[in-house]
Image (cartoon, rainbow, N blue to C red; front, side, top):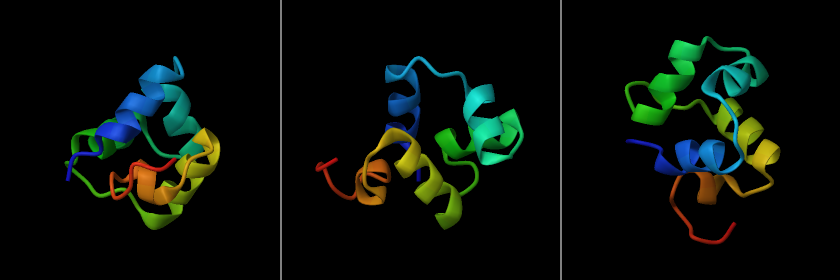
Length: 67
């Protein structure tokens, strides 16, 4: 699964992959692979990103259109 909203939220907030990788305590390469769907985003990191962007996990993962 490609997490388009993860990428879109990052770009809309003018953040770099490196910044979010540091926030999640993963490498920039790992974060990039989250965005492209090469590796799955862990539940823990999905929650962290949802809190960071102040959106629901369902919205972040594309399950819901309600932020």
